[in-house]
Amino acid sequence: MAILNHNVEVLADKSALIERSRDIILDRIQTAIDSRGQFTIALSGGSTPKPLYEALSAQSLPWSKIHIFWGDERYVPATHQDSNQLMARQAWINKIEIPASNIHPMNTTGGDPQQDAEQHEVELRQFFQTTAEIPSFDLILLGMGDDGHTASLFPHTEALTVGDRLITVGNKDGQPRLTFTVPLINQARCVLFVVAGTNKRPALKQVFATQGDDAQYPSRLIQPQGELIWLLDQAAGGEL
Ligand code: 6PG
Image 1: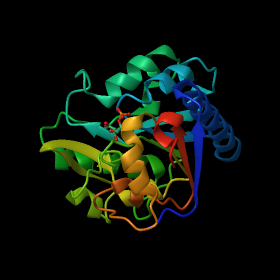
Image 2: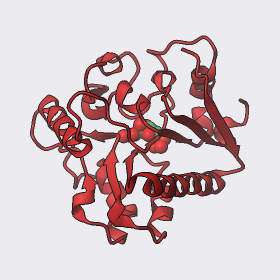
Image 3: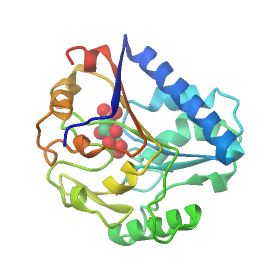
Image 4: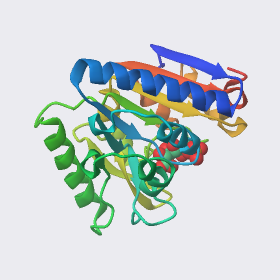
């Protein structure tokens, strides 16, 4: 599938990328709260978004109207150094006055990733009060690995083909992860990719190519019904 309705911005450097990402998120927060009284965001993990989370922690926002989820999580305790939840709490959440009930992490300590995935799906459906439809997040923040994966949707894994669930078990080199599925991500009002670094160039070329292998470059599968925005720094997007 060629990525069609995407909007790609290449920013001069990492700090400009983070500032632009912050500003887009702040704008979507305002829009969502003005029109629906709340804002729902799913965070990405990895290293790129850490300064973005720090920038957001410096904002004075109606935090009680903002609900924070994660688009994927490593199957480790929330105290583990690899935990996406831990990173976001340290960089952002621990620094703001936000009700604990507004934070919706994936549970990764049940011992059975599939069961924990199903449990989080129940929690999502309860929050969005939907039993059948796929809920729409206001904004899903995504990164992209140098292999073209996003969230925990890794190349040639089963997770890529899951079409009837919201949450599934991803697999990175045999390590389980919990992840939003492609249908859930594609139901978002806005999907915002934030990608930095020259090591991402080869995968970006494949992701944006008209013809390409979606199973090899899973970020190609992200074609939301809402907005799709790709923010790249010059290092990542310079040759596109
Ligand atoms: C994760 C992320 C993952 C990440 C990419 C990019 O759990 O690791 O959700 O999809 O966004 O791997 O990671 P970097 O930002 O560290 O390059």
